Length: 367
Ligand SMILES: Cc1ncc(C[n+]2csc(CCOP(=O)(O)OP(=O)(O)O)c2C)c(N)n1
Ligand SMILES: [Mg+2]
Image (cartoon, rainbow, N blue to C red; front, side, top):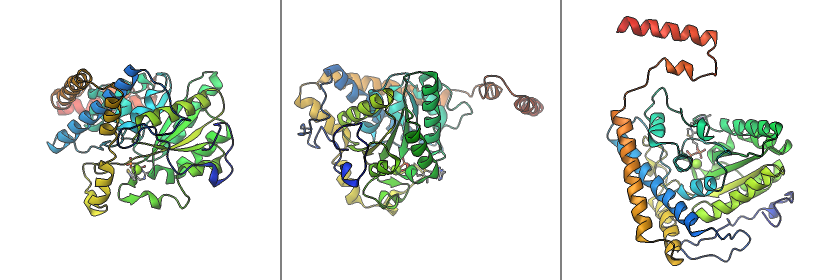
């Protein structure tokens, strides 16, 4: 996006193909000035901590799946900067509408490893605890939550609140009809919603080149009539700055923004996938060299923010959360199944009550 955030985009030349980048892959600052912000050192250290802890937790999820404790898991390895940067600049009352790979954003919002684990373990209460943190439950049907995010943004608008919603979409999700409807609706009604697309280059085995014929995902913003911006999704500071500006724009009543965070899914689509069947090791190696965590660590070392104390804090917290996750997955019994019906609506409907009675009667027979 060139120039002002308010300017309507009218031509392909208005959207920069080169992503906004503040930290170069070698950890040095770039010459970008428009988005450069002076974050306090504690904030910069906190971003690093969250990214590194996300990675550790993600690895523990994969281990648990490999050990047969989970049927499936979708790793976010490689996307930590995009998730942490985009979520860290928001208010706690801004609603997040995740797809399914957003562990970093969940961690940042204080969703516990046990709560995340319940989702992947397939427990009936998976998803409980999310809305208390203004995070919608994960959405497996691709793209549907874009509409939820716009609906919630329009509700906030009507209630006179100044909260913002964020729809986390994948590159693949942008090909879904629901995503187009959401983007269009948001633009027409100036909904305070930011569309944060993590373009991790793949939708299972389909490359991003098969998701659009235009120059980029961000360029589609021209058609919707909203700003579109490409950001280096492996640069946490750039993601933070770009999202902060889009959120402010939405909060001030200027409507939605489409952000394309250019990143990479370093792992398989899920633990059931074998990516060697559709992508080359050369491609993976190229992106490993752009890994957001070592890059940011080098940057923090260059500016004397990283030190052994910070690393120790990261490792201690990571170890504690991984233990919590393992314990919750392996040792925690399911909650009472009757509660499943209690948490669906504020007040149980007659149909649900009948279903609950039927289930309880069946279970009583088995006991
Ligand atoms: C409506 C719908 N269609 C198809 C699927 C099967 N599916 C699961 S994940 C996925 C790919 C999504 O890719 P992307 O949006 O890029 O997200 P990523 O997995 O890369 O994070 C598909 C097609 C689904 N879950 N929902
Ligand atoms: Mg993808």
